Image 1 (cartoon, rainbow, N blue to C red):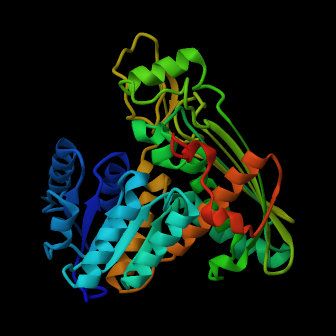
Image 2: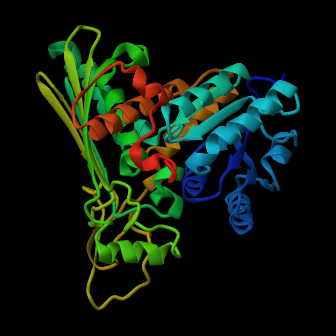
Amino acid sequence: MAKSGTSGPLRIGFVGAGFMAQFHLKALLGVRNVIVAGVVSAREQRRAAFAAQADADGLGPCTVFSSLDAMLKSGEIDAVWIASPNHTRVAVMGEIHAARKAGTTSVFAVACEKPLARTLAEAREMLRLAEDAALLHGYLENQLFSTAVQRGRDIVWRRAVPNSGRPYLARATEEHSGPHEPWFWDGERQGGGVLSDMMCHSVEVARFLLSKPGEPRGALKLTGASATVSTLKWKRPVYAKQLSERTAGEIDYGKRPAEDFARGLLTLTDPDGNEAIIEASTSWAYVGPGLRITLELLGPEYAMEFNSLATGLKVFLSRDIKGAAGEDLVEKQNSEQGLMPVLEDEAGVYGYTLENRHFVEAFRAGRMPDETFADGVAVVEMLMALYRSAELGRTLTLPDPELETYVPPVARPRSA
């Protein structure tokens, strides 16, 4: 059986070399005692570029592996960061589990990007595999580690709650103009639409803000779920055609759309017996400067708020300044002209730096991080409750045993 913890640098192996893996690479520049030691990805060009970037940034040496099996058995990896597409994650965990049980890997920890899985059944299997293999495990939910969230939560719970009581309402929204990769738009491979892709962030950061520091994450009991989903923009013929062309015909929202808007309301009971509410809204139909995240936390005598686009740094570019489209000012950037907000440290503002720092140090110390696969399971349960509520057109009372085998309509196989 592999060791647990290390006195030296944590040697990370990445599964996936796409957009999310690149964000983690940027964040790891702000983390000590870590080596990006390996990468495996379905696309040869991407994994080679990822390894070259890791080496150029001084995070390597990073080896490009031909397969996950080769990386696991190399003896060069302590922890795996799973950043591959959603539909691959159970299979990836299955390989890690098998190598760990066979004693053929040095890997003792695993971290997985959001959401943990496409369904509650898959999420529970991810947790089962990690526990059965005695792996340290972490759920990579970056918004919990946002510098604004960490600072704001500390102030509220340290100064406001002792004087007036626990918070009772957390609002979270996340909006942008649509994902990067074709598989994100595919309900079956991704597990849904924008509700699965982005509300996983919103419900968990809201639950985190409502939770007292140090108390068990399950202290807030989920009692109800109500949701509405719709495809507002991308099923319109002109945009469905645009999306099809952009994905080389792989995605056809004229025939099989996923939701590009979702609104959810979750009711909970706190340890004092009071009701608390999570109000979340997500969209792939927002056209503004770029990705917009807004958060609010309300209590009896206080309020906290955050808007990722209300930046201190802004740049104005006149109509005479021409430039190629890009994302050099803000993620999901939609313009290269006008008065533009600039995120000078996206990895820090979005939480990736503190997230990676926390997970690296927890795994090096041989302990579970603050956010584990169990939290990932809880997130997927909330998402499935919202999807089922939207499908039934009514508020769902929780717990609901039907969620154990539930698959959102948009994620059901095409033959179903």
